[in-house]
Amino acid sequence: MTNIDLFAIGNALIDLEFKVTDEFLNEQNLQKGTMQLSDGETQQKLLDHLNNTQVNKGQASGGSAANTTVAFSALGGSAFYACRVGHDEFGSTYLKGLNEAGITTSLKSVSNGVTGTCVVLSSADAERTMQTYLGITAELSDEQIDLSPLRSAKWLYIEGYLSTSDTARAAVKKARQIAKDNNVKIALTLSDPAMVQYARQGLDELIGDGVDLIFCNEDEAQMYTKTDSVEAAFAKLKLLSNEVVITLSEKGALVGNQYEQFYIDGRKVNAIDTLGAGDAFAGAFLYARNNGEDLKTSTELAILVSSEIVSQYGPRLELTHYAKLLQNFQKECA
Image (cartoon, rainbow, N blue to C red; front, side, top):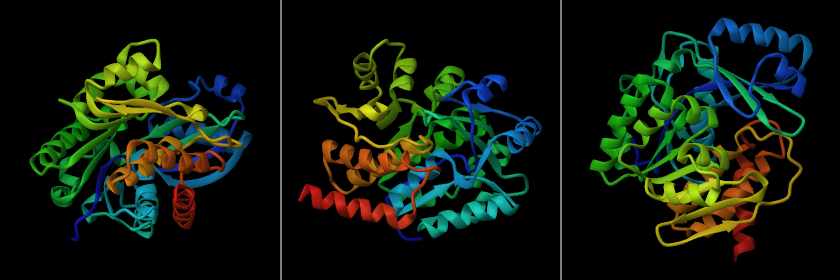
C-alpha cells in the first residue's frame, strides 16, 4: 500500500434524507440540531411515518469522518478510511462510494451484520436533526481496522461520534499511540452537541493527553468547556490542542493556536441543508494545512467548500466540484 496523507476513523452510515417541519420534530420528540442514537426497530417506525407524511430527499453515503475524508481526497489528498460495514447492499454501496472518491479501504471493514443508517431530517431553516441506528459500526474495534497505513500517514483524524462505543474508543487509543510513535499529527472533531452532553467522558478519552488540531462548532465548544462565550471556550480548548478551529455557521470561524487567534468571515449563501458542512470544512482545512497553507488560507478554503455544501441537499458535493472550487480559490489567491 502506498503512503497516505490522512488516516481517518469513523462510523460508516447510509444517510436517509427527509425534509420535515418543526412540528414534525416536536411530535416525534426529536431535539432539533442534534444526533440521537436509536435501535433498529425504533428507527424503522420513524422511517415508516416519514415515508407516509414527509418529503423524501433520497439516500447518500455519510458518516462524519467519511464526509471529511471525501472532501480531503477530492481536493487532491490521499486518504484511508477505517470503518465497519455489514455484508449487505448498503455496505457494498458505502465502500464503493469511498473507493470511487479515491479513498483506500480494507476488506477488514466488512463483517456479518447490518450497515448503520442515519435518518437525516432537514427543516426549513436548513438545520439538520438526525436519528442514527449504528448497526454493525457500533462494534467497531481494532480487529476491523488495518492500522498499517497509519504508520506512514501525516494525519490521524478521529470522529467524536466514536465516543459512545467502548470498542471504538479502545481502537482510537491504539491508533493514537501508533500516531505518536510515528510522528503523525492527530486531529479530532467533537462532532455534535449531543456527544458533549451525553458522552463527555468518551470524548475526554478520545482527546487523551491532547491533540494537534481540534474542530468544533460554537455550541459544542461552549458546552465542552462549560463557558458562556466563544472566546472563553477557545482559551480553554487551547490547553487541549495546538490548533483550534471553532466554526460559527454563517458568521465564519474563530481559528488560532498558542500564539494567535482571529476571526474569518463566512460567505453569504442560500442555505438549504447544513448536513455535512462541518465535515467538509474539516476536510478542506486539513487538505490545505497538509499542503503547507497557513491558518488563514486554510480557513478561507474550508469556508468556501462548506458554503457550497449548505447550498444543496446532502453531505457531499460531486467529486469534480471540489477540484473546481480549489482551482477558483487558487486563482482568487494568486
